[in-house]
Image (cartoon, rainbow, N blue to C red; front, side):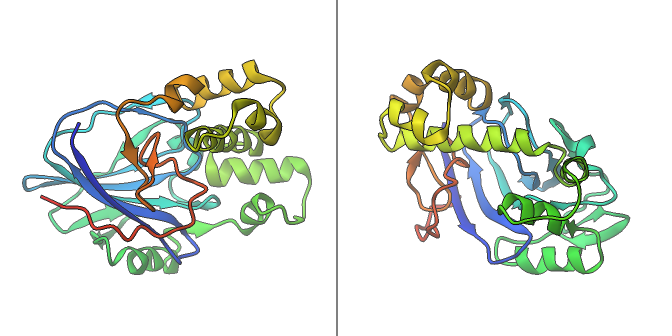
Length: 254
């Protein structure tokens, strides 16, 4: 598989990260479970498509077609589209209709398709019109801050804003951090203790369910891919959650 990626973090309160690139060949990667949703813009020849990729509770495969350029906006936890319930996006992709070469329809309004450098401005406009909103209680809860309301109320707000329960988010994020630690060479028994697994078999089951690979497959991966934030060799292009560097490396785009 030949592909080129460039990614960066964002100073927007709504955006987790942004990346772009293109695929030179067809391939079908095994993607890990994901707690955040993406807005994806694809361009092949002169045809443009826009889709919303919901959160995922298990691994999944996705066809990546050759000679397709892409721009992906990943949103932070607690950010959602009021007119499209997060629960309806869970484990599915929704392809938006009425997509033209430079505009697309979202929330009954037409928007100019953003570029890699105008994503923040585009998202700010979505938020200004309430096409995109953020649940502060969900954000605070994930940051470990005290929130008002009962546990049942918080759970309901999580489901509304993310499509997931707090427990599901915790389990998926833990598996991704575990995979990242394995890539860095941290001994598996140290990770069991550090990440709070009951034992090594518990860790292995979690990785197989949420990442789709065993610890051995992760540490001995023959074909490296790279983190879109810092170009660090990684399990998958979107795995490096612990990375806090902005990727400064320029990739050669076709």
